[in-house]
Image (cartoon, rainbow, N blue to C red):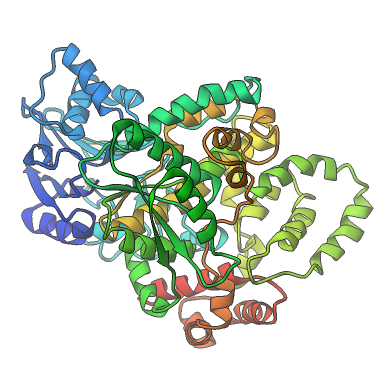
Amino acid sequence: MCGIAGSTDADEPLLARFIAELAHRGPDDRGEWLDSGLGFAHTRLSIIDRSTGGHQPMISPCGRWAISYNGEIYNYRTLRAELEGEGESFRSSSDTEVLLALLRRHGSAALDRVAGMFAIALWDRQRRELLLVRDRLGIKPLVYAPLPDGGIAFASEITTLRAHPKLAATTRDPDAISEYLACLYVPAPRTGWRGIYKLPPGHLLRWRDGEHRVESWWRPNYAGSRRLTVDDAVDELLPLLRGIVAEHMIADVPVGCFLSGGIDSSVIAALMAEEGRRLGSSPIRTFTMTFDDTAYDERQAAAEVAHHIGSHHTELPASSAGIAERLPVLARAFGEPFGNPTALLIDDLSAKAREHVTVALVGDGGDEVFAGYPRYAGGMLAGRYRKLPQWLRHNVAVPVAQRLPESTTGFHAWRRAREFIIGANAPDPEMYASWVEYFSPQERAELLGLTAVPPRPIAELYRQAPSSDPLDAMQQTDLLSFLPGNLLAYGDTMSMAHALELRVPLLDHRLIEAVGSLSSSLRFANGKKTLLRAIAARLLPRSIVRRPKRGFNPPMGRWLNQELRPLVAERLGPARLTAIGIDAGPVSRLIEEHRRGWRDNSLKIWSLLVLESWASA
């Protein structure tokens, strides 16, 4: 796990600036490499082969190729054996050397054989061609910027890239800010800055002779038609997942697991404990964040799982203290506005867990891969709802829904009911966008003073789905948007701020392809997460398997009304908002609705706090 950066017009001072910006991502080693202007900078968090044999940038034995890469190749042992059979020899036991040999022999076609998370920069000295690659799901970040002279620069993080003197004067992108207000993150390929782009998940970029092109090399394909029994499907998926978890545990440093008590992380922890017993190793380490607010606290559920699997369990308390001081830190870490407050928890959890382990497996992706979100049920019911008479839906149901009460303490049933009734009247793409976006197009236009209603980025992705089946389309959309832009973004950014590597077994592409090949009716045969719950039933007690989902979120609704109330008053007053181009009137209404308990506007208010902090920095 590492930080990478580079430029086609590099010199030693620039590489030194890059390394200084990336130091938090790789405290164990650093390296620079220059070749007639092309330069790589690398900081290393040593996980596999901690010797100098894994030092990067790494040069091929023939001297033609150079690689700087961030990530882990989980099947590198298998790939190494295959390459040795082809006559390749190795000097180290690192996965970097295996990846370099594979790319040298097979070019970008080799990516199809690689299982892992990665952001890769590969330089061909003979052709003077740069290849940038981002992993299939976007677990590892990679941003780039075309330079005025036709060159290109890239980095793991936006803040690092802006250390380039030709990019320091980049301006904020108003279209990106609009999309941020919709999603609470800036969807790829935009960033918050004009001229700086995210390489989308499953894409690669080729640069040569002052020209670059971006192309897709992998996409999820949730359009399956295989119809099995649930038991037969589990017979296929469980051995696959067992092997994936075993691969994700390979490391030369301490490995643990973030355990929430929910089904996703519980399955991962159970399989880790199983693999640990098979290897005869010590009990695995598990970590749970606790809250004073019982609506959010899962310590009892996590403790039950930990006791069952025999893990060495640690509880880590969450706190709202110091959030005002952490706002500018968050803005710098992401390099752009990022409005999901769960980032605060991952930051806190990562800092505390890093005192015990260097790698942690997490259950992220379970909802997207195995259909766990409540909105998926709504999407499949919408067709039936639309069969009701129009006058009943529009003239009765909508006015009643708009008056539904709403809790600001974590109970979301009434809010979901309101969103379903109002959103289900629209076509599927707009309906789904209305459920997963936060500020509507009309609200964004009002906040930003726009004369035209802005587009919905999620609706456009939904329309591109390969299947018209509602569940297929919803899962496909989330795998390409909410997952990489939101969950994976805060997971990587906050964990790597503390040099902690997070691994996500449920997002291994082999598992995603296997689940995606199954029919939607099977994936939702017994409700949410049918297949993952069936897998869990073979590993865990029934009480754990049947436990309802809570989600890993801070009690932001209460914090904003209590501990953070002075912060809201200070940062979201008319003067500050006007200074960053936001109309203060709608914001004042949002705050008042939230304080009176009429609407849970916590995420909208928090996202505006983040935007103000970033835009005024």
